Image (tube, rainbow, N blue to C red; front, side, top):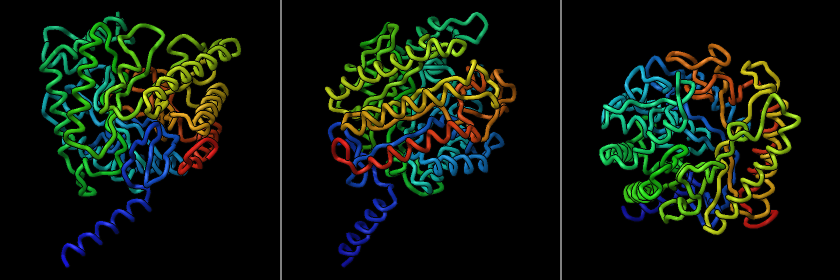
Length: 437
């Protein structure tokens, strides 16, 4: 009788989970599946959610709830968030407070923020892609891990740091792959995270269906160490799967960028424990688009963006894995950082890329979702175009970027209208099993 009751309770729980949309996302071939149906989505990058939800004085939970409510009302069902940040207090160009100020030491109020964020997302039937490291300095990341164990080699921060060099920083950050203590500290963070239970829901993280995927890092680049880089991908993904078989694992790659980075999309994503593929498109950062010459440069920029998406989509289909366009954005008109500046070209770009992604998904391709960069919500920069300092409002532009560059605000009405339209279009595809479904 006890066994019978346990089975009935388990079945009831599974039905409730499916009804609420809170089952685990899985992969079948080149499709995401949820509750027995295909799963497509339009999502947002919400990297600062953990810090905004922190239990300490840096947190703003009322703002967090309001922003999640607005995203839900827009139809945004997937958020790419950070589940890591490293470095001591006062680290330049990095969000504060960090989760891990020293190797293996954690700020419980920031852990609590991740718990709270996931619990609030669960209430709104949202899914989280949780990023666990960073090639760039705005959350500490690989450079900080390396510096912890090789402190005699200071971090050569990139621009806007005085005298900063992107190449010098990238070569430094990639040393992470060849530094065993740094990699071991990262692996210990994975174990620590996967062993945690959410204090608000009581669910162990490994049993929480709000989490769609664990992501190894944000935009990792192999640089001069491509074989060490791929060994790290393989080992890290395998470690996560050995502890948590319930969740998907992704890499967080931007793809095959126009300049050599030691990356190879097909090789980087070929491992069995990497469940789906990702790419990022940055038309302004890569020199394809100039906001001061928008009429002249936009046609070429959108054509290159579509070609970039197409080339990676073809490779994803050869790999038989879903593809997510998980970062793209554009500056306000004339490159302005003012929150009140118009967004004509951004709106056009969002509409063009969302439409193209929807077209590819509707045709039955491996394109399964897209996340715009980035949600700024109710936050506004202390100084438009200035650089973030501890205590400033958190917005979509990370600390090493000029504030107000790419973020989407809660009152960007024309942009929000486009997001709402295509979020609904992607949602209508959920459950489709073939072209035009």
